[in-house]
Structures are given as structure tokens and as C-alpha cells.
Image (cartoon, rainbow, N blue to C red; front, side, top):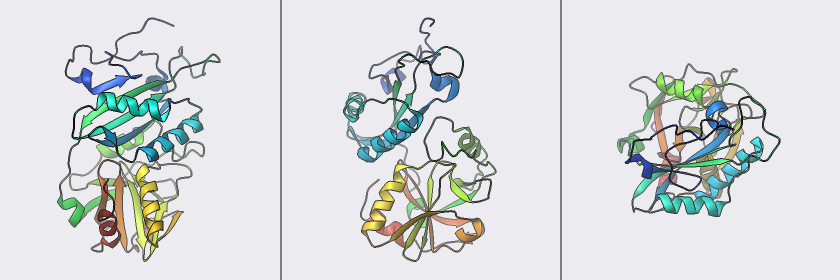
Length: 284
């Protein structure tokens, strides 16, 4: 293995306090890291309030699930929480992001037979509020032209290969808040940066993610809330035609929380019943 090379932020004193690599301040990452070369890793994005990560137990469970699927060893919950406390010492609301890669190896796809240590990167960003009216009036979302790749093994895992989401976001119209991504059977999977949810009377439906998409922590939080409040929850295929028949449509992620959809696919909604119930009970 060649020497470690400083890859980024060599001269930035300001940003050096905004990330840790393996729990330490660093000037960069070894370019032989497999996350850089192949997207060989996983990530999670979450809010941090006064040094405490919100919904941490959900996030760590999802990290563990995704890491197991890729056979990547990850640090314990205690170690990761200690890194968060170290980086997020100032009071306030921030956004944290863990990127955990398989680690370093020589050129080539093959994973080394010898022990390989994962690299754990923790990023700190300012929390940027979106327009308050989005939570009350709803937002417009459109249909993305990008089709996520189908993969039975990687479906719903939050791995580092998110180029389709990047391109979907880049193609977003100015009047749209986000874009709904469809699979190759034209069923709804997710938005490029949010999970999607539909309410049909007292049933909450989430898209089945057997082959594509990202199963976010917001799904788990909303499912637990819904089931505790008398709603049925199902994961199934949702076509555009079926979506238009929903009584309520909303999107969510761990940073923005839950946002009602006002318009999509020439359909308009005014009923935000479930979103209001959730808003009064849970703070994302």
C-alpha cells in the first residue's frame, strides 16, 4: 500500500472542525479508500440537537442492518455517539452524517482476504430551515425521469451509490420541491431525497423497496406512530394511477421531517389529517 495522501481540505482551517475521520480531526482521506473508488460503504444523515442525535436508536439499527448486508464491520453505538459528542460540542441544531466505508485496499474490486478496517467519517453541517409554509400548505412534487437501478441484494440499503438521486435532483424543475422516482415497472419508489407515504382512509401505504430505493428512518418512525394510533401500515407497489386515488400524500426524511404534498401528477390534495396528527405528537 502506498503512502497516505491528503485528498481534500488541505488549506481549510474553517472546515477542519466540521468533520472527523475515525474519531479524529484530519486533513484528508487516503485515496485508496474503497468508498471513493467503488461507493463501497453506507451512510446515514440525522439531526443533532445540543449534541444529541435525534432518533439515534433508529439510525444505528439501520446502520447495523445495512452494514450486515454488505458485510462491513462498523463501530459500536457507544463509539459513534462519543464521536458525535466530540464534534457537536456547541449548543444548537445541526445536521450530522456518518459515512462508513469498507476501508483501504489496492486497486481492483476484490476485497482483501486479510483483515480490513472500515473508515468512519462524521460530517457536521448547519441545519437549514425550509419555508414554514411547506408544512402547512404542502409542496408540489413531480415525476423524475431517472429510473433507479433494480438490485434484489441492495434494495432499500443506504449505500454510497446514489448517482441516480443526484441526477434526479439536478433535473428538478424550479417549481417542484422534490421528484418522485419510479422503478422499471413504473411503480413509485421514493423521492430523490425523501421517502413517500400515502393514506387511504385509515391505512398508510409505503412503497415496497425490494429492488431499489432507500428505507429511511422516517419510515420506521412513521410506521410506529401509525400503528400506535390505530392505522394499518402496508408496504406494497404503488402505481401513479393508484397514488392519485390516495386521501393524503406526504413525504419525509430525517432532516426536514414530514411534509404534506399539495400537488402531484395533476392531482391536488387539501386533506393533511395524518400529517397534522403526527406533527402534534412527534418532533423530527
